[in-house]
Image (cartoon, rainbow over all chains, first blue to last red; front, side):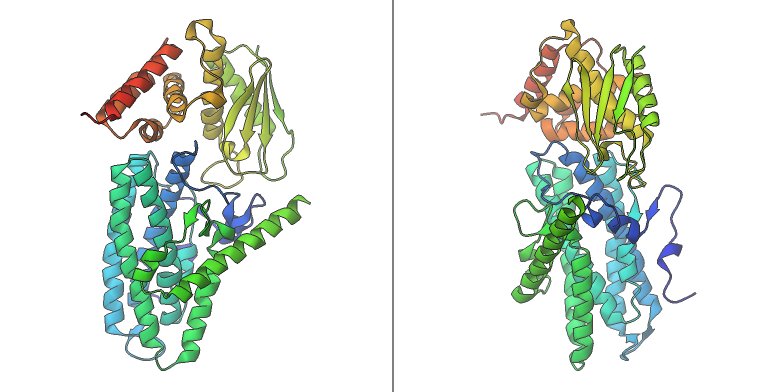
Length: 272
Length: 185
């Protein structure tokens, strides 16, 4: 079985429709944000149930890719303590994460049915799995577990709040449970980053830089932020529980704000 | 024969075909029984999906471009999305033009609960005409506005399967779900 399985060869049945990252970010109506900056997910918005359905489908395909990524990390690296190897305990953590993600896939399918969404009703982009193809296990865990699973914390918390405010006990309960797992996954990333780079600060800096790139790309031009109107709110408390320092959370907030400013400038230039 | 006019004729942000939209709209008008000229104004610069009737006489529908977009293929036209989005508001326009339906407030004065209840009645009739209607999606919308309760589900069924209802029936449905959400004691 080959190492580093390419994203375009991920197995899906005919219900799924794949789009490329270029298609996603090349949309002239708003790039990755698709014009949704300032549209907070709140029950008061007439379109909120449909926005929640689309977000839930995005979570569902993200769970599939997180399962695939964690599974690949168990396989892609030889077991050991070397720079191009992964310790057995790290693989054990990834195996546990596979178990969680498989359960999240099942929960997401049930939630989608509850919300009236069919599998494959919305397109799938493979950005999460692409970050899980990094040949350095530390960068892989930093990009996926800290950046993208960190984003998942923000998304799950946003959906949990939506379920609470709209009085949907099913959505609230499911998101709350999945959120708890995501905190654990991010904590794994934080712990392994510090452990594996304790004597290699240059490698740690490369990993953190990779995280910054992923964080900025997936701030979706300001879709995530700390502003009241942000569609996805940065979940500070849960990020603290996941091993982020206040300075690190401030940095992600700054990256999101910068992405929002750039998106505003881009839209202004496009409409000029 | 009802006529349909789509604006703009050419799209630059999305890959829509005005003629296809006109064809779907004309079929909807015929099936719904709305013998009117309709103008459909599309804002293709946004992926958001709001659709509103902004004038009854003449009949003008304002559409945010995302409402007609294929959710599986960004920027491409989705025929089912066109019939779903347009059918919902055209059914509402038909009700407004029917004196027997009653006198509902203007759209911008409707509560979300009233709006969604009316949509359940309208889209349910579209389903009866054979259009793809996503019943569970509409039930989810309804529950968000009327409560995740058995009582709300029963009211939804009544609206979805209803025929010949009036604005008073829609208001009564809203009152019924509201009552079921009020704590006892």
